[in-house]
Image (cartoon, rainbow over all chains, first blue to last red; front, side, top):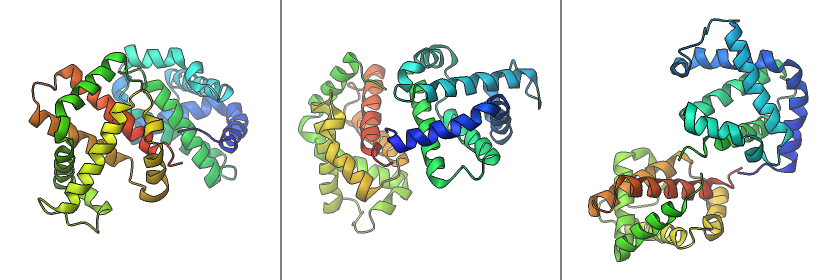
Amino acid sequence: MTLTQAEKAAVIAIWAKVATQADAIGAESLERLFCSYPQTKTYFPHFDLSQGSAQLRGHGSKVMNAIGEAVKHIDDIRGALAKLSELHAYILRVDPVNFKLLSHCILCSVAARYPSDFTPEVHAAWDKFLSSVSSVLTEKYR
Amino acid sequence: MVLSGNDKSNVKGVFSKIGGHAEEYGAETLERMFCTYPQTKTYFPHFDLQHGSAQVKAHGKKVAGALIEAANHIDDIAGALSKLSDLHAQKLRVDPVNFKLLGQCFLVVVAIHHPSVLTPEVHASLDKFLCAVGNVLTAKYR
């Protein structure tokens, strides 16, 4: 699956807005994830997952930073996230199904904050983009 | 997901062992799929899906043929299946989840007829190959 030029532009445009609240959106996305899909908590036995927890905020930032990197290098997401890809493959081994769940929660958080920007086309572009990111992060699993 | 050199030779090995039975395996794969995952029948309202149906046999032959094409051009599956990819994107629009189901059934059929061929490593390689084929066939959906 490749992103068209229009899709890349849509992703980059929304990111400019999202970046201003990246940390909050990251934490909120994780919160939504753990709330709607409690099984995802299995990967964080060592975290305090209560609302507003510093660890949640810290991890949300990490996730959004990585997404920001992917946006910045949208023509070579694989190159930009190569190290993260290895981390997920050899150490974290998060089941691929969970990337869909997190992507969905990120979409919800972004849509909630930027309702008028989140047109169907932008929605589709972001979904494709997050799918690409997820593919990259799981491609070295085997 | 990238097929390693080992994966490729494992896959070619499987298809050479299957040899002339590929068509009948294709039909059996479909039969198992319709049986185990009845929702897949939704794409074939125009078929007679009973055991031994000529339409299922013919379709199984097509499916097997495509897999053999992919295996013969394993270094460029996207190129080899480009027309099929267009067909699935623009006309057939089979939900991507069903490719996994078909792949599973094919693996089962190979396991039944060639148990000694399907060692864990070969199983993994064949599964990766079938995923790669599924990815190619859904790559142009959006």
